[in-house]
Image 1 (tube, rainbow, N blue to C red):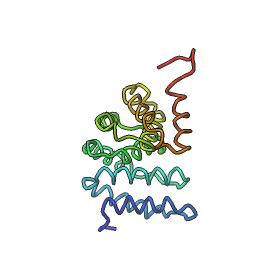
Image 2 (tube, rainbow, N blue to C red):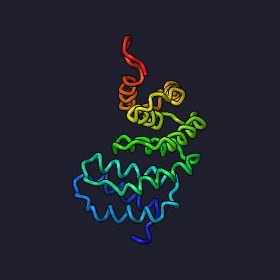
Image 3 (cartoon, one colour):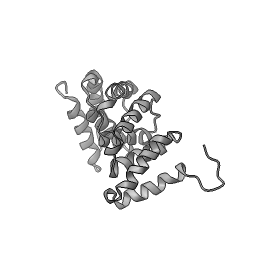
Length: 186
């Protein structure tokens, strides 16, 4: 395992997550996460997002895993450092991972990633916009009205890029973002 690079670790964990009928050996995951912690400075945005997504997917599918918190903190710090290089799909995966894992996103990381979204908003269409918006709602970052409005506007301008499931997700997101008349607003 000492030869594994960031993309190898993320791809291997995601492959394990996709094989639903196999019990994933925890020691393999632990060793990969230990390796990731040793080489965290080599992680690019796509690797960070993929690793978070793989761990969140494994957890979501019922595998009893939770990586060393030091790894998640180190990857979050690395993501903050290289936030300006995140692509929309990577951002969507990373944002999706936090509420899926049930952990709060670091405020500094959220601010750095939000700034990136605001400067590249025109690139957020289809699933990347919907998943990012869903994660913001799930993380209860409802005071981020400029960011939310920008993503909703992108979704509205490109409805042809939405799958039926995306439309359902947008409707679900609308409930915490737009309370019914007479309801208390944040």
